[in-house]
Length: 274
Image 1: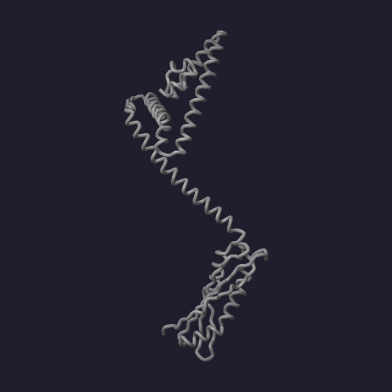
Image 2 (image 1 turned 135 degrees about the vertical axis):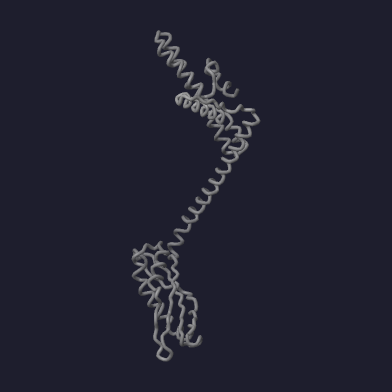
């Protein structure tokens, strides 16, 4: 036989169950569905109306113990545990028409006092998360545009392709790979501030500041190395002077400059622009 089913009217006032700490409460809205294979809809509706308060009281007694085991913010855990407790439903005996099944479903809400306290924090966190997502999306687009403009500027500048020399000697081959990598890095460093101006305003500002900082630090370091070289030459420590010469040469190679470009350290910025 097909069961007759009806629902009790939705509750307007929640049942209050104390949360852990006994300061705040959980607000329970208990929804009841009644079913019976022997009742008519009217008989079942009347039976449910008579026993709705009893069914909600039964749910409340069990939820009382469950609520005390949870923090007042753990509304999802409390709701899940209460509904699991009554997953089998409740049975009531009607002397005239037989057994009636009741299936309670509980919705748990946070104490309004606690909700008002946490609401500003939740809004602030949501704003920060949304801002983070926006910044990450903007960064991804800026990166994509910057890569595009880097390649475009290299094409317009007529940058020659990297040499593709090969060597059977693994040591020589590794050295060639390192030279190619350094050459590519120098090209990208030089073009980055210009590509960033076409890609993103904030990235352009940072890239320009980084470029200026790098060149200024480079000029300072070449000045120090040059002074140390000259001091060691004056006292006859030519081996040390040669070591400083080599350090200057390697550093200038890293910056993409020749040694002649930094013979006068203050000319480093002008040489970099060239």
